[in-house]
Image 1: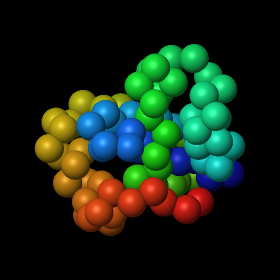
Image 2 (image 1 turned 90 degrees about the horizontal axis):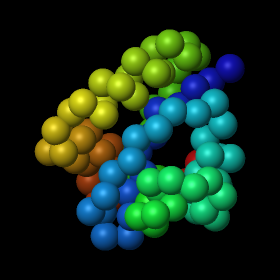
Image 3 (image 1 turned 180 degrees about the horizontal axis):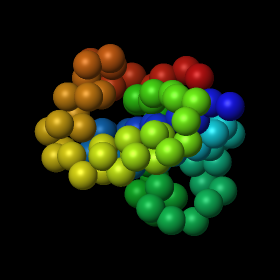
Image 4 (image 1 turned 180 degrees about the vertical axis):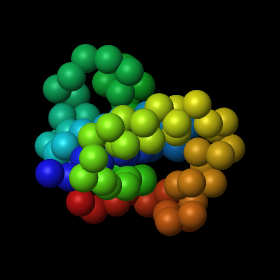
Length: 91
């Protein structure tokens, strides 16, 4: 099974959300359609701009926690390393 660590942002790229899931397509759908109450619904964060995958849930959770501790500048650099224009990614 694959696990995904992902980064979402809002339309203006002002707000970042980092999450982990085993079904990226379903999870992004939930964010886009505001099916789950919380941060992403409140701040309209639903644009997928970065993700990485692994087959190990423990490493996925560890990576999510690591990214959440990073500065905003470091998170921006990570996104821009593979998505320099912060375009919405297709799954």
